[in-house]
Length: 212
Image (cartoon, rainbow, N blue to C red; front, side, top):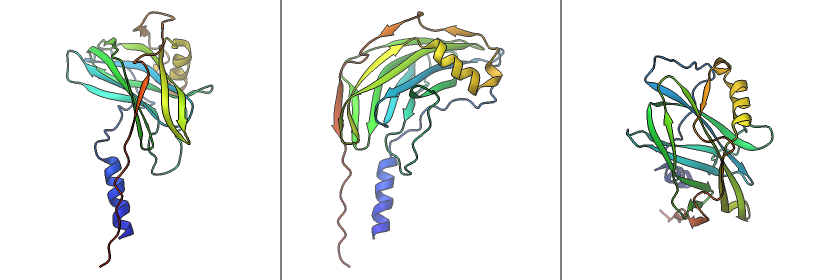
């Protein structure tokens, strides 16, 4: 009976949790003759380990997904490593169909707590065929906690080109000679993107074993 309960809980935690958009392999090389382009950006966080997510969608295509740093729920307690030396986070290097895209939402998963934005925002970017484009960095700063659970965050959007491209050159050696185009104004800083966070608690159902 206990084993059945554990299996049900794992399934409940997994249902509806789409996988994040994966980065390309370390051996990836940009194909200038392709109808796809390379997107480069990062998600970083200051504070407790949680799942920090940024969602995007295609404006002129049906592509959609999200980028994530950290982990919201860990069935195996092994924290993910950071791509950066001085801050926790992940460099996102993703191949996408050429087209217009928009980031309109962020979210945080921290155990049974789910955090979301309270104000609309839009960060648009363009992926060009056969080219690599840098779109900036989303920085999550934890403002409130309840024990080991994150209950409040602030999100900033910034140009961290030098920091991010240094990691790109180290992790993706085949891209060292690739020209990376800026998809945002240099030294751009947008504070409090999406406004204050809203917290919702999603407690799993409790199963009480019965005799028999």
